[in-house]
Amino acid sequence: SQVLTGKNIIVMGVANDRSIAWAIAQSLAAQGARLAFTYESERVEGRVKKLADTIPNSIVLPCNVTVDEDIDALAVHLKEEFGVLHGIVHSIAFANTAELEGMYVNTSRAGFALAHDISAYSLAAVAQRLYPLMTEGGSIMTMTYLGAERALKNYNVMGVAKAALEASVRYLANDLGQFNIRVNAISAGPIRTLAAKGIADFNSILREVEEKAPLRRTTEQAEVGDTAMFLMSPWSRGITGEVIYVDSGFHIVG
Ligand code: 0WD
Image 1 (cartoon, rainbow, N blue to C red):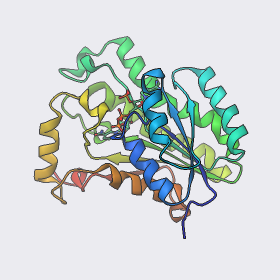
Image 2 (cartoon, helix red, strand yellow; image 1 turned 60 degrees about the horizontal axis):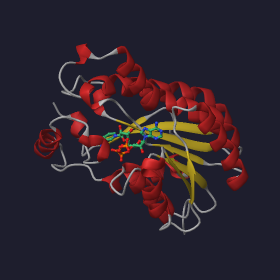
Image 3 (cartoon, protein in one colour; image 1 turned 90 degrees about the horizontal axis):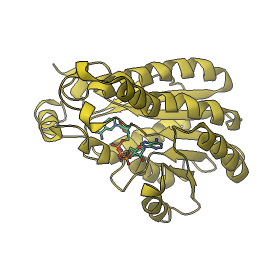
C-alpha cells in the first residue's frame, strides 16, 4: 500500500530533471501523492510542464516567490484544484553568482536582500498563504545546506540566508504546531544541479565529501527524495522544527 494516497502536495523549485525538487516529486508520486508543481517564469515553464506530464494527475501553476500576488493567486488556484492541502515542498534558492565566490565581506546590500528574499523569506511568504488550506494538518519542508552553520568557502551570502531559513523553520514550526502542521528542513550534501553551477569550485567540494564522509560517497537526489517522502508522511509525525542531514554523514566528521 502507499503511504501518501489521498495526500495533496505542492512541489516548488523544479527547474530541470536534475533538480532536487524533481527527485522529491518522484518519491512522493511513488507513494501515491497528488502533486502540484510551480515554476518561476516562462524560462522554465516548458521544462516543468514536460516533466509534470510524466506524473499522472499532477497540475502545474506559475509562482515567482518574490511576487506576493503570485503567491496569493497560487493559494486561490490550489484551493480550487485540491480543496485541502497536506504538504508543501520548498526547494528554492538564489544568489548572484558574483557573490558566490571570493570574500563574503564584499557582499552588496542588494545582493544580500535578494538572496534572503528568494532563499529565506519565501518559505514564510508561502507558508503564510497556504497553511489555511491545511485543514487536516500538514507537513512543510525546505532545503538547506551546511553553509548555514559553518563558514564554507564560496558559499558566502547563501550561507547567511540558509541560517535565516533554518531559524525560520523553527519559528514556523512553533507557530503552526497548534494546527498539527509540521515544519522541517533537509540539509543535503552537495549535489550537481543548476543551482550548484553557481558555486565556484564545486568539483573540489564533491571530492572532499567522497574522501571524508562516513559513507565515502556524495549525496544523490533520490536519497533526499526518500527523506522528503518520510517527512511528508505520518511516519515522521513526531518531528517538527528539525534539520535532518542527508549528506553521507559529512557534517559529523572534522
Ligand atoms: O548541492 C546542492 N545542489 C544543494 C542544494 C545542497 C543543499 C541544499 N540545496 C538546496 C538549494 O539551495 C535550494 O534551496 O536545494 C534547493 C534546490 O536546489 P537544486 O535542486 O540544487 O537547484 P535547482 O535545480 O537550480 O532548483 C532551484 C530552483 C531554481 O532554479 P534556477 O536554477 O532556474 O534558478 O529554485 C527556483 C528555480 O526553479 N527559483 C525560484 N522559484 C520561484 N521563484 C525563484 C523564484 N524567484 N528563484 C529560483
